[in-house]
Amino acid sequence: MDILKEATIFEETKMTHMSTSDRVTASREAKRLILEINEIYKKTQDTNLMDVMKRLTAKKKKIDVRLKGRPNSGI
Image 1 (spheres, rainbow, N blue to C red):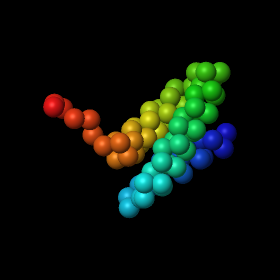
Image 2: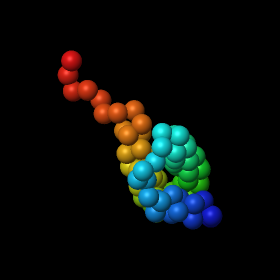
Image 3: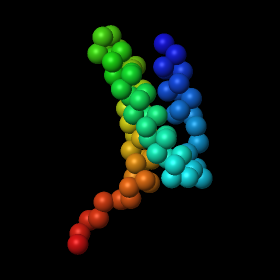
């Protein structure tokens, strides 16, 4: 299961001072990791995998907010 090692490395990577291109790449990498772990989770139903996916999703959301901006709360 080296996908978990990749996920751990991704989680520990600092996301400061990134260019837009780097953020896009990181967002795509997070999506790839989440989808691959999800395929394994479907077969094993291991709760640890779900926890990893939740952490990756949280990090991906932070990257996406930085890319797309925050949604407006009014007009």
